[in-house]
Image (cartoon, rainbow, N blue to C red; front, side, top):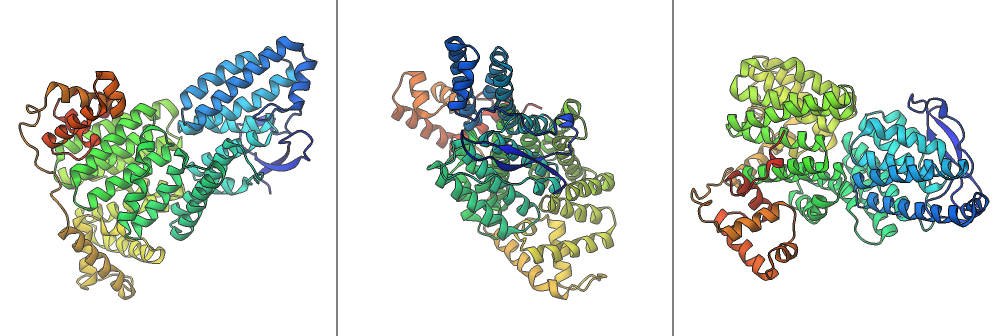
Length: 567
């Protein structure tokens, strides 16, 4: 294998070293593409570490080393909670302390610190910094946990960049019979990443099986459900959604939403929120979809995830524009444009996150133009966005862009291009089992599908084999329309006036993420009293839960939550 270099991994004292594939060939690694140094420390102290401490300075050094080990454990616990900011702060402190130890011990600790940083930066969606940290950990560390974590981070970055050649070149490290928690989480993510690649390529059955294996790995090695399983669970839910098992998809995500709001990876949060919003929109519940997307935007601000904010804003534009609310769509578009400029300035236009956010902005800009001024639709930029998405391996993500291209071609007088693009897309969708995304298409595209079914338009392609599939799409679309509810439920005009000061305070504390018990302690009242106030509040605002209550209360000016709508 040309894309890897073997290094020795020694997971415990006295164990025979085994070969572990370390990705190389990257400029970030440079001259460090050599065998890992000896003397590496695993994630828990061992006999060799104790011997090294005794050789380098007795009880004083031993106490200092023991203190560092406790700090390292605290940092890994923060990683397990997906608290990347705390982990990075602790890693900086550990590095300062480690420099006072011997060269050998310091070098070994630096390998583990690099692995810590790599994991934390990956959770922050900072691929530019995460990959060099992971490669540094591989060059410095030889313990199995450190190597496993670094390899998983490398695999994650290569996947995000669409570099599947490097992604597949990174070999998996086989787990021991009883892996530690971080090794188990790495195993879960490895399987989830494989599932994500399969889903990106619209190999839905393989994606579902791999994601199910990831969930099983979490149960087997960790014992109880963990926040990390939101990622593979969301992939399964996406597959179920495309296969029209919408209720099952929603239930799978709903069961994890509490953890996703508090502790989750970006991928789990992004896929879950977008999917729930799509489900709501497909049922005609546009108001609920906007509530979910507003929550996602707020979470993106709180966790420092620009990509989640961009996805939320882009889907808000789609819903608002789709219902003729042009001013609201334009406001979301302005925030998205500001976010795209901010990301390009911070990380450069070549970073994957910047490219994705730019793609979101391009799509949103076209959607607003289709409603406001169809003649001004920028077809060229939309084609480039489609090309970039496919080039990075996002075949599934490219489908909505292709549908938008069909619609844009129609409104700009390129009917032949629209028909050809739609026929090609229908052939692809039929071959891979893509369903619900086509059912959810715009009115213009649905009318074009109907024209193909009724053979009212000519095509350079033979559409005969597509007719049963296209008819089925239309049947399911009509069935969904009949069951749709009012997209923007009418709210009581005097809702704000009917909310008491105590209810206003409670919804404000809800917006800060406090549970009912925490609110009760804050206000020195019983939890049951909080529940009673919340029930009355929901009735007055015509909402069903605290998420909708916080979002609507913000829009009515009852509370001030600027992070939901900040650029």
